[in-house]
Length: 206
Image (cartoon, rainbow, N blue to C red):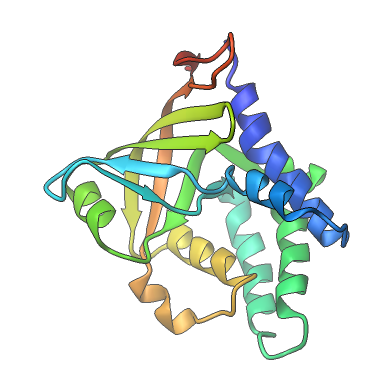
């Protein structure tokens, strides 16, 4: 079994959609919504806040040796927040350094990252129990279950990078970053839960 079918879906499908948007293609909203499922799993945690599922935007990160150089480029863009077409310019930079064919070799496919914006059930549970399952679903049949161990970053390189990456497209607010912790999910196991002959809980990693 190969985890490639998860990475092809989770990374390559999203990359193709971002390229269409950067190229200015007229994409039907339904196609955008389906492709967005590669970015929004339900994060399942357990602790004193109860067994919980929370949908969060999530994504792969560059390998650590590339992050500082990319972060410098991000920060230069964020400094132009008051100039026209900020989001469009940001998306082009994100595509170049995260989603282009050249960028793929720099991506660390062993981890996924996101920001904590609510500090509610997930926040409480991950302080007590670092195990988390990321459940991806694209209607009508595609589903992957990614079991992970989580890290909480309140500062440092991953924290700054994920906050900057979020603000590359959204209007930036660096003053809020100290209140937006980051999660790094280290992938331990992957299961294909799709309703296909190769799915129904088939382990594909390790």
